Image (tube, rainbow, N blue to C red; front, side, top):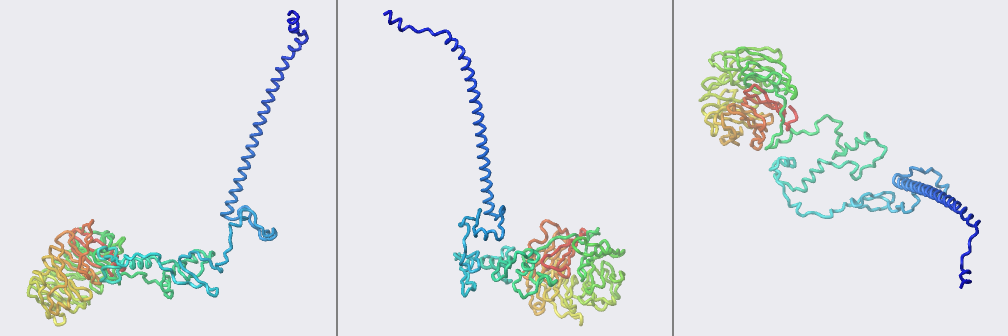
Length: 562
């Protein structure tokens, strides 16, 4: 046992081995430190390599993206970065490289025969002997059967009256008329019309403007609109439509010198540029009417005569002024001189405020006392005759030729006088009239209007009235007070009726339909107490004077000339 134990006992290390192990321990520490440093350096190298790889990858991606963008740009906008040079493709063996190398991008059309059809649905073409022949248009794919049966009433809506082709037309077929009106107001351009010549890109807008202007012409043989100074649209030949009157208010005619009292007379000169305004302030004013400034030309003061009526002679040479005096005045426009005439020989009238002048500028008719009508020569200003009514004389009016005179008064009758024989050749009762207060004849002599003290206005056809027909064509009952003023415009399509006893009592009658315009007087404006009215010779202007001393000026858009 002892031998076994002694054999298994450990052998003791020698001293130098122990010393050697002690010396080896610091070496292992140094080696570990070196290893750690090496590992760290290798990690740094790996990171730097990764960064370089990432940078290279990013750079390659950017290059690829840039190449892709260039390729798309070349496809869309052509060869921007490598423009083709003539001759290079042939040298390269007709090989196309780059973004255009894909054969799927192009194809050769060998069926068009030199002509490209853009819209095949619009028209059909057939080719005969290499010539292009246009076929009949295709029919619509679908039609609404109710379009032809729909009827539209154009009388109720004012804005649809422009679709009328006849005066008495009241309803239209919606689809056909609207389509025709659209084509008329929006003509197709010349480049869109079939058979038009080719349009070259090198033509400038100014050079092509003439072609566009000619597209509006229906007949190519007509002269160009630029070769004449005539009006393109002449509305005066078209009949005025009833219902709504198109107008606009302008600057007051006497805005530069308004009156302090009532305006009793306004009238346009025959040249349509001169307007007179006169009233109880004893001043006779002349204005140059343009609708913007209305410059005052002259103002004349009469010391002894408040003006009740003033009017131009039809020839435009003089102005006749009357008032509640035994005399009247004549103003010579050429010499700017006033002449006082009267009292008339053999007469005792104390007032010559109501009168009328014949259209031929030969006779002035004054209302006298006890039913007398005084006839005065425009040339000599002397009394040349008298006419006698059964009742009192209240109103008078000359016919269009100046050979006849109409008068009415207290007996409710209308008298027709022949001025050559100075005899009454016709006398008839004005229907529903107790006392006549106003008369007016149309410029064409076909109609005349008679107003009464009850506000009734009767419109007669003169030939029928003289033939024995007593029934008026129309009775206007829009006024409730005495009718003081009646006036036809130049073409007898408008009749103005006025009463001085009530505010805004001025109505405009559409003569072809015998209806009153619904938008007159202006709904948001007040005319005060109107006292007089006149239309310009061309119908473009209308002037109204009121009791406040103002002269309102309006533009009637239907008439193009003043």
